[in-house]
Length: 327
Image (cartoon, rainbow, N blue to C red; front, side, top):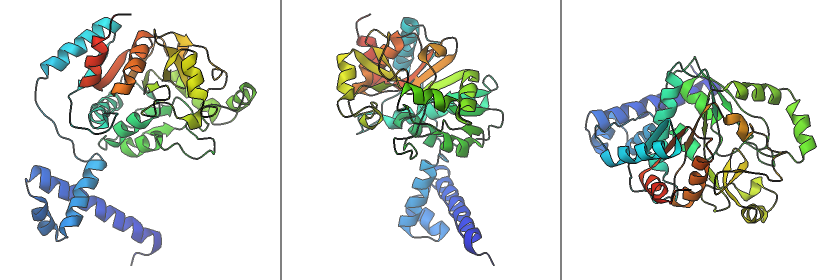
């Protein structure tokens, strides 16, 4: 007889197995949801939940064999214009969100899985944010014992609760790879506090591991739009974003700021940010996963900075960036 925690574990394993079977019968077997329900001897509503769970946990991957010629042309133009070594544009799908997470998450998940499966990078740095979290959630389960993941910036809130968009724990679940969280907020309270924190066990080791990362996957934040921008809770009060805009900030990258022409902008946060300095990204592969109409100026600034070697975005955002006048 299984009791207590073992009983809960057994039920979870059983549900996971049923979710996988339901998805297989629906997508591979071509059964309707009612037919799946009958086959598994469960109510229709439960069959629907099982199939949805399989999708959410990345157990279902759909491949479409099509040549998206227009997207390839735009990818080529972005690579030429910004000197990128890699560019992937996801085709448009209906999405009511200001940030096209459906498209970005699928293409982003594929990139991260390929990077984790290859032998080129033994340490991969990963940022935080809604888009990166969605990309990791869309990944299938893939054992990647030869790679380590590390957070490249602090992800704790001011109350030291976990960041809701933290991706490291989920990456560990998906890949069974060693994954290291930066156990710190995005910004220390002061420059002095940052120096003290950098000496602490856990943080100093994480910073050393970040220096070893040969691939860094980041998001791009805009300043204060509320749609994929850095949140006011991370900054010094509600007016902080406006102060940054007045100073010329357009984009946020690893908690640091860029002006419209891609120049690294000095800010009061530079001595407090718990992240790798932007200058330290040079010479490494740095791929951004970002998109959405509100982010076009920010992504353009990130591209102009010369810090990025790769970009994953959606079709509408890519077209908008290509349409911008040359800087």
